[in-house]
Length: 212
Image (cartoon, rainbow, N blue to C red; front, side):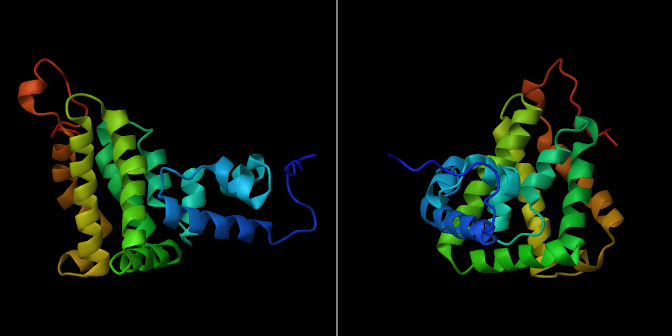
């Protein structure tokens, strides 16, 4: 008779969460982001999938915890993109800046980027996560022609800013106040999300240059 997975929290096993994280970290690095599911991690840990959801909420949450991220840009972006599209570029920039500026969440993110430059497995994992959870999420929200290309350009701008400000610490960007960053980077981010004019005839775009 097969042993059934435990329901709810495992009483008397405080290491269950750490066990799940260890399995998830190994599976993500070996199999890639897309292939890993909460159900597969739960099965290997011999717990109910509801327990994994209880601890980590979602696959994005499990990924962030497995890589020791106190704040996950993909989760932050998923919350931001659900709001008003007219102000999405500015809000996304402010929310992501807040994540990187916070010492508790920013330090692990910088460590992750540093690790990705030295370990191809981590590079591939971060790349896949960004494509699935950031570019695809934005593309689904904005719609229209070349949505994924425009979403990719948006994320490329953000990634360039992150590397410039937090990794290379190039001046004057490294010392700019967040409000100044939003003022300078807001227009190109809005432009990145706009459909090409030849394909946008007759449509009013919420990401137009007049959006504030």
